[in-house]
Length: 236
Picture 1: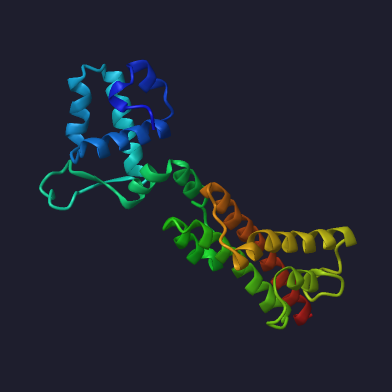
Picture 2: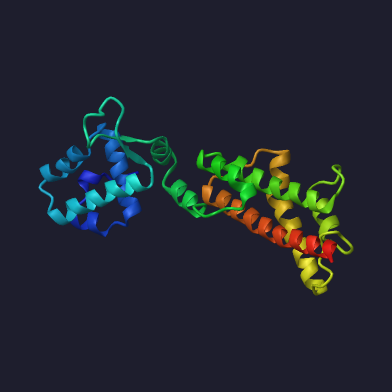
């Protein structure tokens, strides 16, 4: 990161979006080993920055706290109410960039109950494992609902389950919609679950991994509807 918080002009500070300003503040805290929020703001005052700019510094610090990149109550400084420290996630952002935060925010939703463990993996930074595990959960559930043999895997399982005559195919849908549903599940599993089963997949952009998890969430909710339809048919 080329920019330095202390070298920015007042106009530059006030024009930066809060996430970029926050990451610059985070880098400043790391570079100066600052552990006190009051001292951090005083450093800006020593530069004779106007109050409007110092308020931006304060906004940046509060943004860092809200994103769990910085926390209050540094161990060993418990008597100091303004003591702060950079969190594990904060150091991860310093290493990898604030795209990590954007990806995590995408998953700041109520995921399907069967994907909660996956969300925990993602928050720990295990992006590849989380994406793979999410799609594996989809595959497991399709097998459970269809009663397919354990030897039937991946795309073949999706085509067998949702294809013509498959247990999960909805006979009341237009044939094109049935085919579309089958291809949706087969494509998702073939693209995002099968490759990690055979080789290491590196999600250089964690946002891409978060989108895979969200796609798995959508598929799980479609499977909820499938399960309800099967149960309704069995009881009628």
